[in-house]
Length: 355
Image (tube, rainbow, N blue to C red; front, top):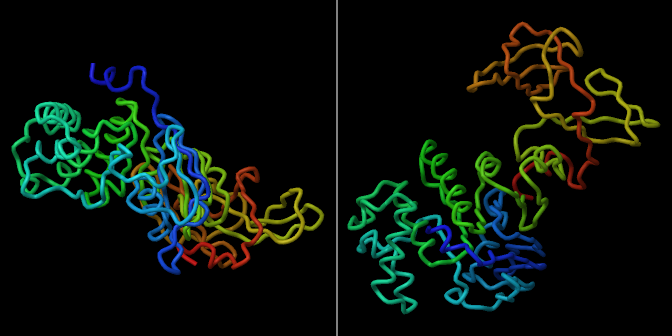
């Protein structure tokens, strides 16, 4: 019934960000960011620290005002609208709970501050706290809650605003590994169950791959690629993205009349000149055929093994679901190789999180 009341006959917010930039003095925090978030999507802004993802999130929330550009939500230009008039649920990285207020008072505060009647505010807040499984802790103070409970309270408070747009800034960052996985999955399920549009900021690649409908990869205040988890992993737009999302091996290959050689194997492409070849570790196979290798290390990581082998005096990462300790060679399928022109700043610098 709750889901029906919140979503029936109501259009979710479609968000269009047009060429948004933000400067703090001479420091550029965001450069010409453009993005379309569709109704009901769970979108993750992913990138290293300082890349601009939280700045973009706060610009949407109205916490900071863009230096240039436009933000449109549900067809309305909200670029200069005060935060309190945007009706957006925002979950802060540090929770931002009132330490002297109970769980219920924290969750109902936003509605009360906007003039909602106390009984209605507390009623809505109670329902939202049921969704985040805190209905038995209504009278507790934040300090009496675990880290995971405090984060769920922050989410419940954001949901109680009645907004169909939920913004989350590193919502699992302060939790231990087990709770982080549990909460991130619950956040996605909750957003889908309630029909929300969600924008979630993280620097954790695994988290982004696990929960996103669409990933927005950022670096140096710029959006580099937007796509589904499969698209950004299988078809990264640059060597940096290939390296930042998952693991990758990089090789230089020279093509002459469309012919080149990689790990001793002849390959054909409609390319000329020097290129960077990228091969994911799982797309390399250890065995008795291919190029000779020497095993450097083996680590068992759950269902697979991670190897480092030496091939032509250079280390290569390989992932396999079987024990390949006795392998003497490595090979690959040419159709699993990605090719890029070398970035202007050089490969090594382009792979760095900044610069």
